[in-house]
Length: 293
Length: 254
Ligand SMILES: Nc1ncnc2c1ncn2[C@@H]1O[C@H](COP(=O)(O)OP(=O)(O)OP(=O)(O)O)[C@@H](O)[C@H]1O
Ligand SMILES: [Mg+2]
Image (cartoon, each protein chain N blue to C red):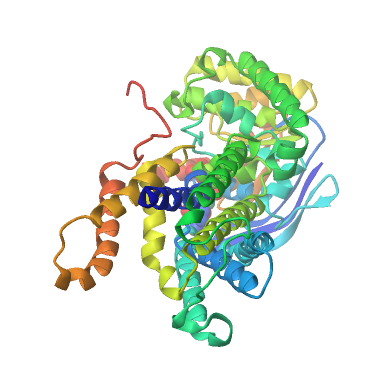
């Protein structure tokens, strides 16, 4: 029972994470390959502040704001280069973030990580707190879902789709493409920060090893598998990916092979991602139903 | 209204536009003709901010617009089409029109959540406006079709519809009738004349000479990046430099 609650919490956190990426990747066509950095920035800010004694709720808000600001700081230079290089710039940014966490020991304790991250005062520690934490996460996920649905179903989202389909048309009709993209990345980053902070306070221990390329691939996989540019796609993708990942744990893998499992996971997820992009590019939920033709 | 002074643009050693100066009056339809590769599209790209210019000045209603970003020039009311059709293929025809409308409050995040009624009201108004434009262009039956599924000619008409949604003051059309059938050309011409009567200025690149003669009070001719003629279309046909530019091209092609 507790285990099911645990998996649900993880899936909901990844839903938030994937929905936030979908805003950028699915609607605006921004291939952000460093989204995990904002998840991590949210997690670290929230962990550091709450360990320093700030109430968890306040720490979470600061974490979202911090991740959003970091998103803006990345977006402004990264959007100056062409699309391909935007992907590389975001990838490099995420790696830089990880290295900073690894090396600035005075702040982050380096590879040791930050243990003992508290939960909100009104949620019990350990397994007793699981149901309440699940409710908190579900409420957050619902809020994010509705917020992003409002955004993407609005003229704002329509403008993003214009940019995704033809940036020159957007410009020729007076859309400030750069500004719209910056707003999108700031929003997406703040929401990823929320996912990160929910995760940190749930797991209670974070280290730089939690924010690697594997996590980036995982969240991109959630979005692409579920269906980019759709409301439910990333949620569906997140549940599928998390449930699949947990199911793998029950495979009878010999003990002496365990140390290969983690790196293999990354490869497997990467492989699945490539397969989907090649064979089923619109994912489980397709954005455009092509009738006829 | 539009004043262009000594505009020059080169791509490496190629002078695509060389020291071009002209002025568009306040009303009417102006044509731009010239052989392939003479720099007409390049000039349009420069006027609308898509290409940076090397030298020169451009004024639109006393705003200096040279090297301003495209969206700022567009917001002054200078709206262009591209030589290739550029539908937003996965959006409906109606959405193609609504999406490009300027000054939408719902494109900012704040009003979406704090003044939703204003956003809704504007959306309704835009929808009505779009349906009116589609009626005018006789595209109303296709309003819910994906734009990518329209024929080439229908796409060209739809692109004109998009421009009408943008409250243009000066329209730049890059070969609006290329590759479409005579019926649609007549339809397009009718709409252009109507816009002209409403006081919207039109500047178009066109290879169809009879059409230019019929539509345009004033004609510019470009050749090898230079403006070689400015005057009425009747005079253009008698101008020795214009004749040479075209004959030169034909003997080259032969
Ligand atoms: N981005 C670019 N880079 C390099 N050369 C270019 C570029 N754009 C245009 N040119 C060159 O500039 C010259 C003028 O091209 P332009 O497209 O303006 O001609 P045009 O008058 O519109 O011709 P057409 O009637 O065929 O459309 C051509 O020689 C073209 O090859
Ligand atoms: Mg051209």
